Amino acid sequence: MYDAIVVGFGNVGKELVRRLPRVKKVRIRAVLSSRGGVLVKSSSDLAGILDIALTSKRLDSHSSFIQGLSIDDILDEVSSGIAYIVIPPNYKTFEPNIQIVMKLLKSGFHVITADKTTLAKDFYGLMELAKAKGVRVGYRATVAAGIPATDVALGLRGRDVRTLTAVLNATTNYIITLVEEGLNYEIAVAQAIKEKLAEPNPEVDTHGWDAAAKLAILSSILEGRTISLHNVSRVPLEAVTPQEVKEALKAGKRVKYVARADFTSHEYHVAPETFPADSPIGRIEGNYNLLEFGVEGEEIVIYGPVGPAWRTAEVMLTDTLDVVRG
Image 1 (cartoon, rainbow, N blue to C red):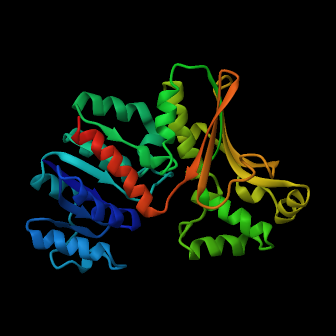
Image 2: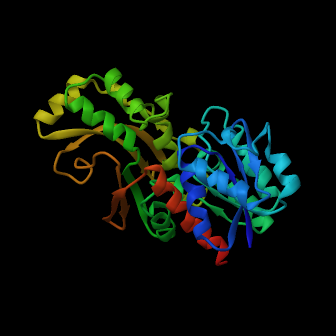
Image 3: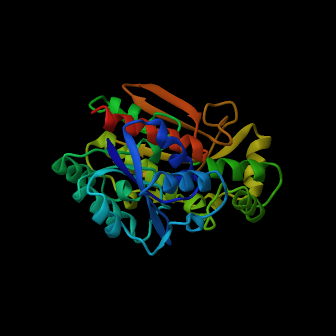
């Protein structure tokens, strides 16, 4: 039996705790939010968490909520197991995300994460620490959750992979579609925030941080060395004007926010580009991603839905099975 800690209780965290009871070898022992947490010491404690997960309530509405409960406090109660990281990324200071993940790995926890921060900063540093501690890092949910993107990248290691061209951010898909329909960027972004498709700080999406982090993770897998988020250049989505978006559409083309890696020149960037409307990338809309791997003179393409929160949680269960089945 594996004891489980869930760090984060937003949309993905709630969906995750609702699904973890499906894995018979995992039991939830603690759940943390930004304000504190709940230690599960009875069936009623767990029932209370599951009830809140079905609502829009915060974790601090739980009767056993402990204000200020920290990772260190939980480690005094739970010595090992599986830690699920479902907190927002921090691409400026990388903290407290890296500190949390490193502390859990050093304490002997397997880590399953939807947060890209640590992997995008130092992919192989993280993997080497996990190997030294004899634990796993599950990260399928960090890139295009819902598509086996990282599995495909792992399966291509050692082959002649020269390029990767991908649409990796669904929020910008939505914004561009609204702009095509006649809205300006400010209104389109506000609508994305209202629909909870963008963070309150939308620059995570529109300035390429999210796509760059995903590209860094995939590139690290394929190159066999750490490609940091800061190795990826970024051009904001707004570099293309609404007028240019609409003119492209009239010409049978579409603007897409694209992540590219060239593994020959070792160049990585995220920027708006124009594609024929009937091309695979040109057809991408909404909650879908697409990745084109240039392999041995041919293209390997994967395409499918990403998000919402429940799908990300489902992918984290796949990583969980890797741990419990050894």
